[in-house]
Image 1 (cartoon, one colour):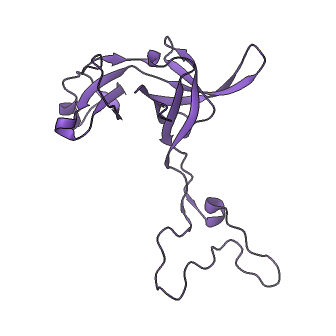
Image 2 (cartoon, one colour):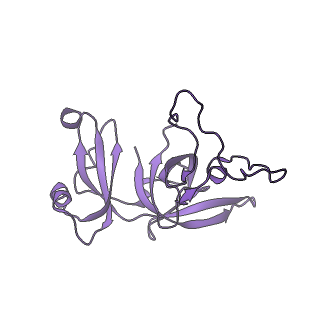
Image 3 (cartoon, helix red, strand yellow):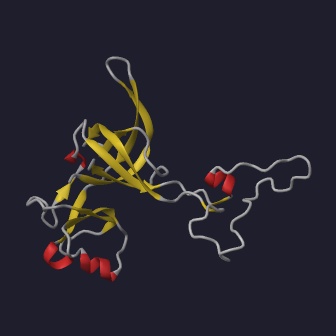
Length: 204
């Protein structure tokens, strides 16, 4: 399983030799360090923990967890693998050259948070009439019946819009620049610029 922890830089486009314009998103990649292994015998599943960037300070629990890797990671993520390759020893380094141009990937991240929103903006409800005495312009309307005397879970109402973890599939690696530590993926990815994104090899 190929994977990288990246930060969103922004969007641009490329022009192919046949004149086709392709929108791409640039993602910055700092050097990764293997921090820890999870095994079936001890943890019930197999995974590798990666860390990237450098933190100013670590809590005692995190510092003890990563002491064998001899780094101070700012971001830590875990990638599940059926079998852990021999080259991924604790303390080994990984960079942007993990992926090649044309690889199919999926990108996971948090969408932009948009605060509290009403039902019209959040769930695309229709607005009420503004004529003949109508008062419910942007109200949600009925949210329950006389029986049972409670609101069902999952009822679409006003609330927090955005800031949800989503995964965008069907993307491809468009460019890999190991000197600048940048990779480009086709299309758009979730989140604001400088947001943390996990790029993984496509599973389907």
